Image (cartoon, rainbow, N blue to C red; front, side, top):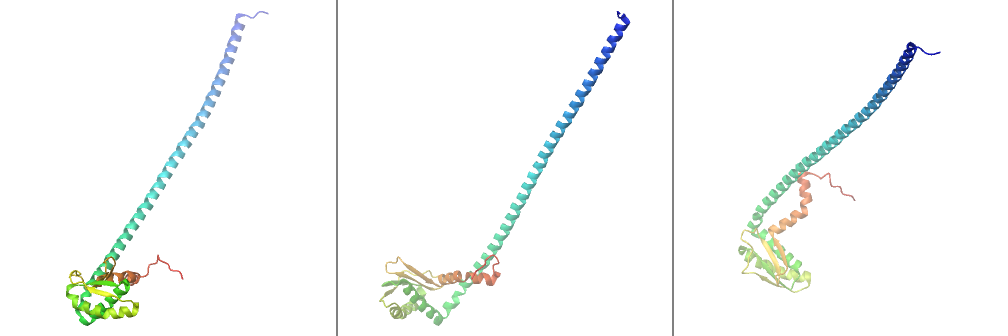
Length: 226
């Protein structure tokens, strides 16, 4: 049975409606899938950027913390150095004051003569040379000559050696030296400095731990084991 034009038109419309519906459904499916993929990608990008931002600020926080530690360490070191400098200045001041008081020893002839006797003898015993030259301040020549005469027999008794001692009449210690002597070997290559200043410096070095302890107390950072 042949279809009329009306039937044909109906079928065409029906087919067109079906095709349009399929196209709309397919378009909606594509849109939904695209939206889903977009949201996934957007979420991934957001998460990536968030992690980057978190990492950036964590790194900055660590850098700031490190800078704080460095600054605090620098401040502590500077403060420690100031304390050490102040302590050294105080010790230097005390030693300078002690050197000024050496003149009190020289002012008493009996005490100073006895000290010169010991300084000359010690110098000879430290040298143990057959010939020795003794230098002193110009104003101490007579006292030192007396000390040499007394020291020679004592030296020979202790060392069992002979010695020739000359008191230098031409070259002297500086007049502003506190006192004492310098004893040289005959060729002047070896020197024993027994001036009052050098003896004070040596004593200060030997007693420096006790001096620091007396002034500043025991150092908690130093531990001694027996």
